[in-house]
Length: 97
Image (cartoon, rainbow, N blue to C red; front, side, top):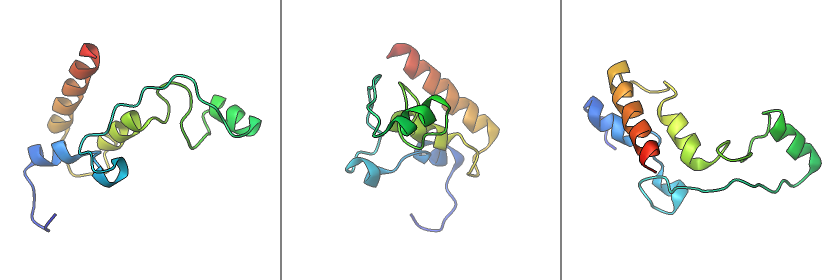
């Protein structure tokens, strides 16, 4: 993007998106996984303790979740009211899924 300031609503719809990470898909694909295989027992134990860097059990570490977490982490210049709209949209989408 150019260096110009975007409207807050435009910023919100771009948060957490990285098409290069998902073969060009603008929206993060939905990853469905509940059972994970770990390379080592140490990795399994680290996951259980919340210290594993990769995907853990269920929602922990799946790109669908981490991209949303990145969007609402506060590492950007979007206002609180814009976050409220984003969270409401996310809750509505997950309730319908």
